[in-house]
Structure formats: structure tokens, C-alpha cells
Length: 219
Image 1: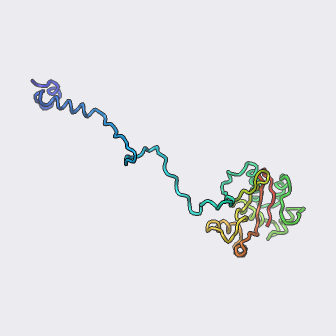
Image 2: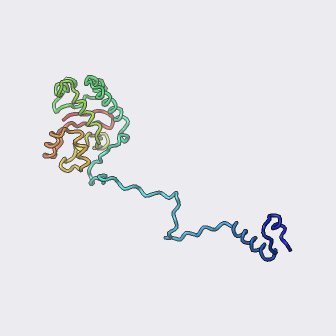
């Protein structure tokens, strides 16, 4: 007996009893999906692609500070909105290059920020008098450098104060290499060398309350 399907397909003709059944069985087996092997605890089976990847290692110098040490913060998005608004006003005025533009910022403040250990009746005149060029350009530059540095949050409740630069509150003899770079971005090198010998920060520092009130900018 000859397979009619084999003739129609032009394939080699063979008795149905010998080749058709094995070929049909093989075709049937080929269409069955293979069952995935069951995973065993502790097996080496590959993990699903959706499994979370391990967190990247912390960058050098990012170790947690000792207990009780205020955190050094670089992310300005962590500041309250009121402080960000105050900072924007200060920076816009400083970038103008005209120290007189700082007067509206001072007038909008709830109270005059402390600019010296003694009372200052005319902040603009005070800054000009104490500047290198009599125009206050170096004061504005120092202000921008200070407020662009990392900062610290100190106090609780109504006493919270955000302080720039963070190393104004640190022992300068114990700065890390990365913190040394931050330090010299703000402090002129000749002055910085002398400050590091004593370990005390004596250059410009600033403080803004959580409510956005600018409390001081002085050295």
C-alpha cells in the first residue's frame, strides 16, 4: 500500500507501515512545548530579568559622619521653599555686579542680617568700605562662593538654621581631601593656609532660618 500524501508531496515512497507512523510520532513530539525545569532552592538557574540589581557602591568620601555630627548637604532641593526663594534673590542681586541691587533683598528680609560683630546702620556703605575695590565686587563674589558650597542644618523646631559653608562648623585640621577642595573654592589660599594651622574658620559664613529669614553674612 502506498501513502497518497507521500505521492502528492513528491517525497520518497515507502510502505505506510514502516515510515508514516514513526514520522507522525516524531512530528507530534516536536510540536509539544518543553516544560521548563523546576527551579530548586539554591540552584544555579538564571534569575529573572526583573530582579532588582544591587545598589552601586558609595563613592569615596561618602561614608556616614560620626554620630552627632551634622550632615553635609549639597542638594538644594532639600531646602525649604522659603530658603530657596531667599537664595534666589541673593544670587540674582550678586550676579548683577552692582552691590546696590542687594538693598531690596535686605529690605525684604524680616530683619537686617548681621554683617559684623557690631551693628551696621548702612549695609551697602559698609560692604563698599570693606571691599578691595570700593565697589563691593569681591564681597559679591565671596557671597556667591559661600552660598554655592555645601551646607549644614543645625538646631530643632524654630531654632533650625541652615549654615554655609558647612566647614565653618568643622575642625579644619580634619577635613577630607574632597572637603579641602570645597574649602579652597571659598577661601583664598593664603588665608586658608593660616586658618588650617589654627583649625578655625574665620572667613565669610552665612545663616538662613527655616522660614527663609537671612540672619547673617559675616566673617
